[in-house]
Amino acid sequence: MEDDEEEPPLAVQIEEEIKHSTLPPPNDDVSVGVTVITGYLGSGKSTLVNHILNSQHGKRIAVILNEFGEEIGVERAMINEGDGNGGAVVEEWVELANGCICCTVKHSLVQALEQLVQRKERLDHILLETTGLANPAPLASILWLDDQLESSVRLDSIITVVDAKNLRFQLSERRDSSSFPEAFVQIAFADVVILNKVDLVSPEGSGGVLEELEKEIHNINSLASIIRSVRCQVDLPKILNCRAYEATHAARLEQLLEENRSLSTKDLHDTGVRTLCICEPRQVDLDKVRLWLEEILWDKKYSMDVYRCKGVLSVQNSDQLHTLQAVREIYEIVPARKWKGEENQMNKIVFIGHNLNEDVLTDSFRTCTTS
Image (cartoon, rainbow, N blue to C red):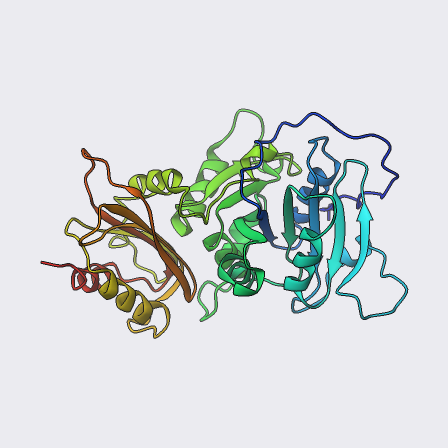
């Protein structure tokens, strides 16, 4: 069996400041973006982290290796455990040659994030690698709309690293049981999927296998962008500052919704994790939409398990395009911008989840219209 992960980076003395950056400039927000990295053990999560920590990108990026999952992972070896005083939220800081910071967190993620953003040297970005935590939804909920964090940090995106060689097996594992493999859930929540180790499945000049894998990923989550990689060597601008959860960053969301407008599950005969899109041309009553959404997300009224939800709404008595986003039970509907005169003011909502019923969603959403 091959060695799937690289050795951890060594902490060395910082000797000079790196002045050149290939990443987009930070926005004017005072908040620091947080990217959640998830994936199967051996998929390449630690390789991705090491790539970022060792790259000469001129950014101060903090990496949190959390150990508050179901089990303590092998990443513990990357960080010294300190002197055993046990009381510290952050056990140990390791500062790297390129200005990045590494730390482990055992208990309170919120406190650890606050400690990070209060450091004297301002951070450009924070990466949170999940260890022993298959489902990134709880972390996303904390980072996205948790009042404790106020505006000091913002959820930027969820990145899932998948192993191209083993993905098919991981997706078929326990397919017939009542529970779904971790790979389904991790892909379903992703904004970006890194299809890693493509060199192990596709000889030069042959891309058919990879295209089939990408199709399978998009069947689960058509909103995610897919990046092929070897040893997680990816361009950082493609995975940092994605702003996937910002209502004001609506252009990318609108593009995704337009691309997914024809999605349907009517030709699928299983009840797996899938993506579908519903559309409605008439304006909707915002209060009715909230009640409708809460019945689906909170009450599981139609026995559907919705993981992610993204949409744009045409709201009665408003000239504003409203964006809708949901992660599990938490959702947000906010005005994003004015509708343009020539635009087709269509409601479009994409659902990613398990046991989705397109007819039920379409018919029930019609009850939110104003005519």
